[in-house]
Length: 296
Image (cartoon, rainbow, N blue to C red; front, side, top):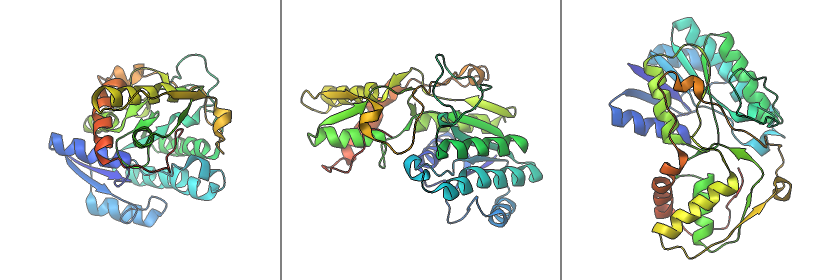
């Protein structure tokens, strides 16, 4: 079974390549240079050339703050592009799994969000992803929302905290936002499992098992560094979101209920079990630098 991954050069795309290789699956990861989802002709041409059984759409505009001033670019990829891909897949009988986000919710809930809860995005990024969901579902595709994706590489949260801690920098991390950290490799494995079935069309939530705050995640990272990588005792100062000064509003509560996807036999892994592995890899690549971010 051939699976094509759009956004193949991104964080999730790289995880999908790793997981598919380990499982011996036939996966083709394509970046924007080969498949720009905002270009309907390019989408059609590549799908005809590659002829996959399923597509996992990991292509996304994810610069949450920048999207507030770049609405057109965010919607071109996250909404319009998702629609192009969904309709092209539907026309060819190709199953589509589209990755979405907890940012489609406003964060005012007091219990984990269900798939059928009304969306109410606070910012442009969330609005663009919500619009993409509508387009994908209208074409018969499947939406998988996730939360607080992390990995060891790039400029993500985990490597940023590792670099800052090892450089002896002051750690001030937002403590009033709640969510479920999700290891990108775990999400990749879940998506590949769903693609192989394929899953019934609709919306599913996949997020790491166990809710915390960004401050709580940072503390876990520092504890791992202290226990296994020789870091001296280091304080992580909790701060409110208002003190961080982000441009775009974020949901204060972004915990996702995962019962629906668990019913398919896809059980989210606990994020704490992944921290040790991810921190070890991030530590090996870390170097002292000061362009870190302590809140995504």
